[in-house]
Length: 271
Image 1 (tube, helix red, strand yellow):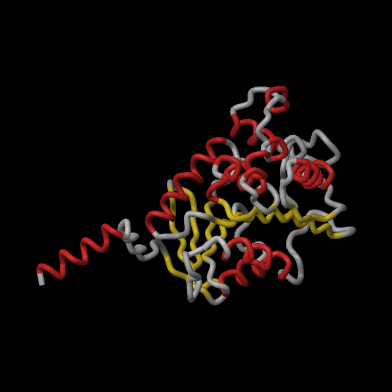
Image 2 (cartoon, one colour; image 1 turned 90 degrees about the horizontal axis):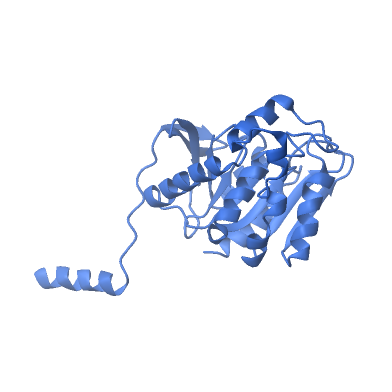
């Protein structure tokens, strides 16, 4: 018996060690689109993990930056294909360095506690674009792909409203506070908006998908997605843009297949 134990221990060492088993999910269990959903708090912020019935190899996941549950057809389809879906309510931080640091800690919690994959697909709806792009720029090695839907890619456009969009003065003040800007000039001189910070993503060959309406007067296409598309292609990056003619600041597609196929292609192949 002792020899058998020693033999097993030696095999584990030769294999480089085995990963620790994932712990049971914390929080209140509910049902969401037919899947088990767990709601809990992380550093006093609301957090959610929705668990697929049969997790895909490597325990891949989608991180929804904002507005979880706003459009369910993408997330529910991915759950059916074995991806976990995760949300953290780090609201009113607008993808600031503080938000990126919070995301870092939540990422470590999910990967170490629940055994989720070290590489994640990111979903950025509207202002969620600031979160996914800024975190991805800090950690391109952790990202399989980015799906951005009517995304904010420059806070001067929204909530600043310094271009063609409506802007939002109250949200702009919160944004300035989140970044620690005392004046608008400081914000204008900031060079780490998503539109400024794409080189690392292109070098890491992270594929991007944007879905947006060409009549969006809140997050104008010309000041956000169009700039990202132009810059990313210039850097040699892979980006696909689906433009919805005559559509304003609406999200998603009636048939989510172009979105889910994109995420599945680049996420399942990473495992």
